[in-house]
Every structure is written in C-alpha cells, then in structure tokens.
Image (cartoon, protein in one colour):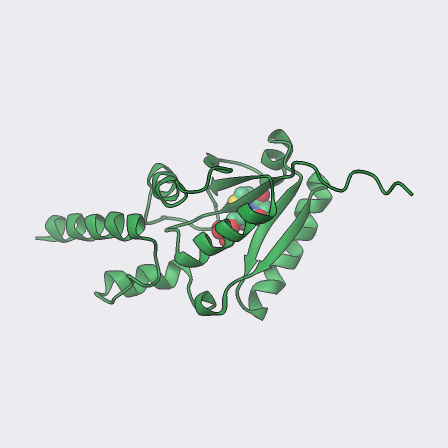
Length: 173
Ligand code: PNS
C-alpha cells in the first residue's frame, strides 16, 4: 500500500509582531524547528498594533540573535497580507503558539481566514506552561515600570530593552 510520501522537507512560517520577542516565542521557535525541515520566522507590520516599541529592524535583529543556534531557522520581515507572503515563500504550514483558551478564539478565525486565502493550514503548538502568562505587551509594561523581566525574555532582547530604557531616560532628563 502506498500512502504517498511520508517524509519530505516541510517549510513552516511562524509569523508575529514580536514586539519584543519573549521566551515564549523562542520556545515555540525551538519546538517548531524540531518538527519542520525549515522554519521562517516572519516579523510583520501589524496595522492593528500601532506604535510598536521596537522598529521592524530592531525586532528582526533581536530575533536573529536569539535563533543563531538553530541552523534551520531564518528570520525575515514582511508588510501586507500574511497569506500572500506564505504563498510567495511556498511555505507548507503556518505555525502559531497558543497560551490560553482565550487565544484560541481569535486564532481560530485567523487560521480559517489564512487557509481560505492561501490553502495553507495553521499548526498550533501549546505554549509551555511556564510561559502561559508571558506576552510582549505585559513584558513591555512591566519592564518600563521598572520590573524584573530577565526570566521572561532572551538575553539579547533584554540587552536591547535596557538600552532603549536608558535612551528614553536620557531623553526625558
Ligand atoms: O498577534 P501578532 O503577533 O501581531 O500576529 C500577527 C499575524 C500577522 C500573525 C496575525 O495577525 C495574522 O495571522 N493575521 C492574518 C491577517 C493578515 O494577513 N494581516 C496582515 C498582517 S498583520
């Protein structure tokens, strides 16, 4: 019986704003990189999220520094529709992380829309329990109010955040 190819190089795309990347994102990246032949981490300009804290270039650079140990992962950015970008890169699947049940509501409709537009399915990875409360927006809020976020973000991200906070502080003097 031939069920068709059982193993082939699968190209996955993990899109997101990553403003900034967190340990939760990195955990999804590492686990997806172990599941798929190739993983493209695609940093988006999300028009629904105005005034990002970090520029597209900063977010891309932080992610590159975080994934340098993963040989099958590359980082890029795009503007426009995710479905079009997925098609242009010939990605086989989209990868997303799910932290809590409330994530599912919006992710389900987004996955269905992306599939309708591109015929590409979304694979969901459950976030590790220890990151279920970690979001980019929470990390930013805590950090810029002086809280401790070192356990929540990768080292290269913490460095960029600290530099940004110092620059903002200097600017306000
Ligand atoms: O929540 P995030 O990290 O900002 O995720 C953004 C993204 C692009 C993954 C999500 O909004 C999505 O899948 N959107 C589909 C609709 C689309 O293509 N929008 C334009 C890019 S934001």
